[in-house]
Amino acid sequence: MRSQGVPEIKALFLPFPAHGHMLPALDIAKLFTSHGVNCAIVTTPLNAPIFTKSIQRTQHLGDKITLKIVKFPAVEAGLPQDCENAEKVTSEEMSLKFVKAAAMLQDPFEKILRDVQPQCLVADMFFPWASHVAAKFGIRRLSFLGTSFFSLCAGECLRLYKPQVQVSSDSEPFEIPGLPDTVEVTRKQIPYAIRSGEESEINKWMESCVEDELKSYGVLVNSFYELEPTYADYFRNVLKRRAWHIGPVSLCNREKEEKARRGKETAVAAHECLTWLDSKDPNSVVYVCFGSMSHFDASQLREIAVALEASGKQFIWVVRKSRDGDENEDWLPSGFEKRMKNRGLIVRGWAPQVLILEHKAIGAFVTHCGWNSTLEGISSGVPLVTWPLFAEQFLNEKLVTQVLRIGVSVGAKEYARFGGETVKSERIEEAINRVMEGEEAEKIRSKAKAFGDLAKKAVERGGSSYNDLKALIEELRYYQT
Ligand code: UDP
Image (cartoon, rainbow, N blue to C red; front, side, top):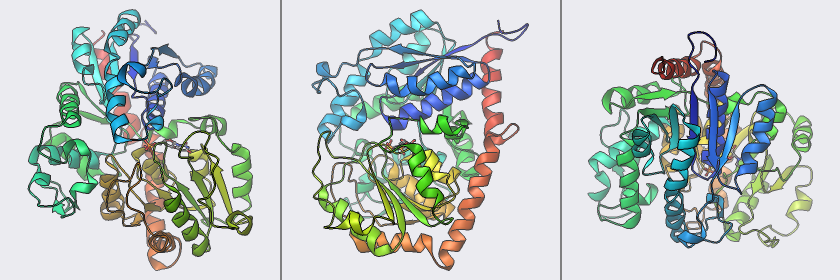
């Protein structure tokens, strides 16, 4: 017992092994500890450093998070031995093997459950047995779906009403039925697992994840009420899901060092980035980053370089090498780096994103609309240039450009995680200029800034996300009395 009458609770976290899932899961664990909950996180050997780097810091603060390591069955699933994180996945075929490997963790996971004996399990939706296992152990499973209320609602309406199977081609736009706003997408812009009515392996896997997830105790949503109240209400009242909005969870990292340590080792020292940004005017730098999993080919990278140069704007551009050890730089136009010497910083690898985004010099964020990045941009009050590539990112783009109106689209038409459509430099340049200068840009900037302020308020004591999390923890405690 923590103190008289306050039962101690332990939560076990099971994040999917991808940065976009592990980082918010760790942030949520930190938030749980700040409300007095002891946490353990299940991860694999090669992913462990991502957590330890940050946990060491948290433990200094007196909080309690431990790690439980399980072997990732990469080889057993037909993957290379070191493929323990979705960032190593380079094709759709590997994607399927990767989710299957994660699903094979059930037995070692049950051993850990027996050992830790938590009162609550926070599990990612990509483990199709998590609610079943929680029920077997008599504990509550909270699911973490890692996206906005908007995309949760849109995804559920696509699953329920299947408008995508009624159109005659992959590029024919259709409306998502049932949503409070009119939102149109095409089949090429929604997840493979729900694209067609036909049974496929990926489609069966997704159905099993959803079926299990629907049996969970409720959903933790990394969002805040003031951002998307209509959709938060729709999710709860119309789709009848129990949910707690507890975000933006990245804001739990308050100190500079905590922010700089978030994720992988950075390819550029955080202080170097900040010193460079300090020398720039407010709102004058475009930050370009496409998350942890996308792979652009040389021709697409060249289009981005041409757009950045033509825009005349200063920039930080995060470029992921398409393969480890690939030093080939033929994607840069000749003389580009020399010409951009004082205007741009290219980060080849991992960037300290949340630190960069909150710097006052950042004027826009060119993003792939991964939900973490999108929400980090929103929390920093930064206008967005949207360039979705896969997963539910095209839905997040609709939220940003059509509902919130804090961004401009480059006009991507289809999935391109492993290559695909090339977006031309003119479209990228135009979108950058539209959010950086002129009357439209001013309107977008002031709206984005207002959402940034609301985001920060939501997580402060007494804010909507703070209160929802507190209510959840009290509810979990209530069951232990
Ligand atoms: N991230 C980062 N530095 C990078 C790339 C990504 O800190 O160079 C972080 C980013 O802040 C976000 C996460 O990695 O928290 C990526 O998650 P997101 O949902 O945006 O995209 P995904 O990687 O899942 O496609």
